[in-house]
Length: 109
Image 1 (cartoon, rainbow, N blue to C red):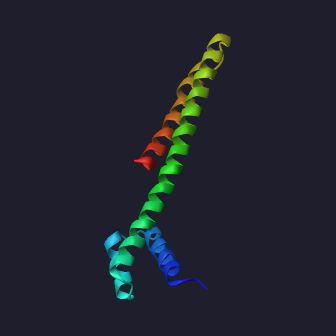
Image 2 (image 1 turned 120 degrees about the horizontal axis):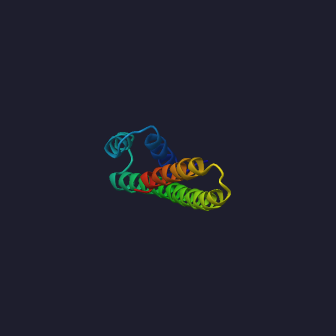
Image 3 (image 1 turned 90 degrees about the vertical axis):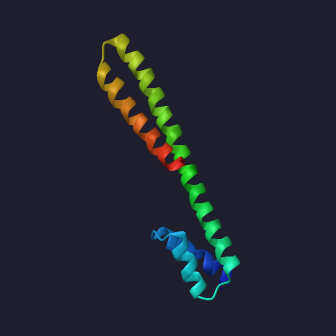
């Protein structure tokens, strides 16, 4: 059987996922009878965990974008020696890598 703290933590996480703001969550939990200091600590902890998860995913995307850009660089060099499809690799793959990196940066910051 879940404890009261686990119940409140799950409730706070669910409300954050639904897009509610910090003040709305705190008011609703206070109406349900939770103590003010517990509400503040659980809301702060849930928001911190959410930001940490976004930061981790963002860094993964930044690294993936950098790897795609580096592969684009290598393929551009090799295709320039073999007279292959130079512009497609140079502009297409590099643009994809930069796009992935920027999406990651948006999640980090």
